Image (tube, rainbow, N blue to C red; front, side, top):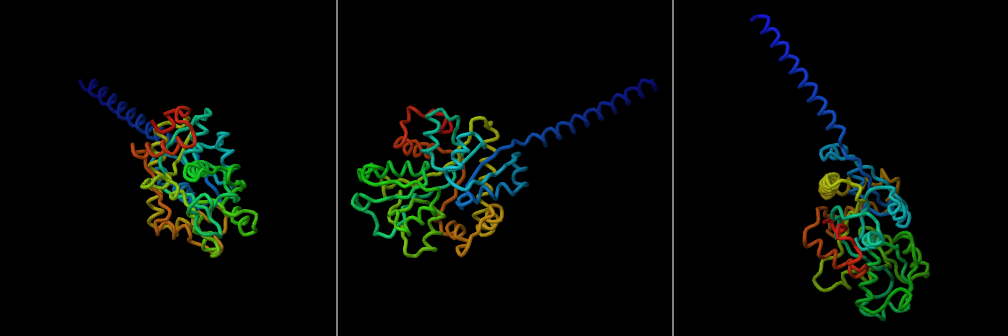
Length: 322
């Protein structure tokens, strides 16, 4: 009996040790299972502040079992070219441009909302209230999804379109467009918050002459910016990333100055005399960061916007997060 009991105790100890090894192995596997994802922003666009904050917050990434690599590019054309080439997983911006990419076979979908914001035309003239204010003018434009939507809304409102009523001058970013306005080679420059505030504080002679809200149907919210990602990302990775970015945005809203400091440090840029423009825009509610998975209301608004630029029957329904 003693021999039997000793054998049983030995077997039990072996089982406990084995169970411990299995548990340790599972824990190690779990620790290594964080999804690695990448997202990009612009060195010149302070809208990328939350991305940089998340990229620097390893504890927040670990909490959501995600590893985030943030890449920064100098201009809209360079980041868009890199995205369509699949060099990284996700990019925030206006939904319409991404929808056009999806309509051409781009395997992407909306991951989450990002912010509500206006497209702004900045110039020296009085506010544009009719087609006459834009007719025959030159508009310096970063060629992206937000502009495509705004151009379509201008056409619907005033009957004007690029090449048939006014001229578009492609530029890499708002600051380059402003340079042309100041030089007299363009009448207006197109951009968005928080860089709009930065420009207006730097150049008091400039002002907002038209916003996308002015050409939207009455009562509709300002344009929704979204985060779009490649379908190669798993649903779990996308969900975890959206949750992590949502928490990063809360941190940004709680201390936007510290967040902006982090952005300038990582990007290597220089805020110059207009430090904390982003912080002021966020605190004043001019730039409303809001990250969450799409609601039915969000989806309906984004589809309505997209339909102005791209026929919806050409866009896979999966693009809209379904």
